Image 1 (cartoon, rainbow, N blue to C red):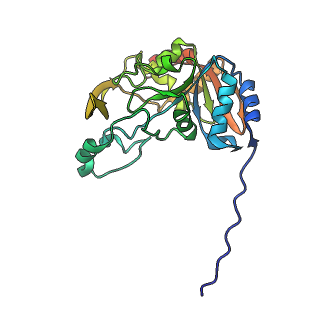
Image 2: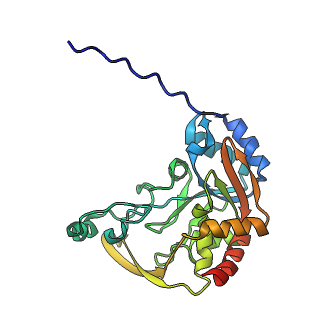
Image 3: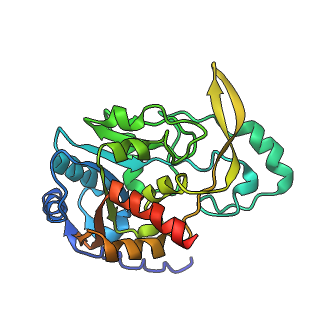
Length: 274
């Protein structure tokens, strides 16, 4: 009989210990208020040990925002795209080119109720499945929202407008929304993409599977090229020149900022730096 190897001792979770009450206090210290429309980009693991995980984080956010507030998250499903584009993030998958026709013919059509999020973290997936959550119609870059303005934010997300004037980002701009970067950097700050369509930007073909009149279709549209490679540099300049509230939620280094102000600054920045 082979000797039994002793199991390694369980790994002790890294702190701090975060509860709903502690998260509420941290969020309020960042200036998040009742009635805000808040777009959250997040990393759960950056926060430390959260009792109850992502559900606790979402509950804390909703408590701070209150009944008059609206919580919005990216609910992206970027795997619903042409396989020729998969080598780069967020999909980062190199598949045999011989498979591409079969993949285009078989990728499931986007379903806002069933299609899971990809590469945006645990918190957005929790929001997506939350009771009363609404989700926009774009098959790759939808947003999910809970609260007073959820219907306004998620309505009429055009298929040929990932992040432009017919997207939830423009709706949130009109609501004077705020952005919370919760343990993530400016490379995740999608509101900068809204400004890309307001400067001279190249166009691209974008393909995905959708349902039209009850039938799955592979659709190709023209949209603005999106490029976040310089967002960290842009974010550093924005933070130097504009009002950004910094603080911690648990162990997560966070930034809270105005979405309209960030979009306006980004437009000017792109005109000077691109």
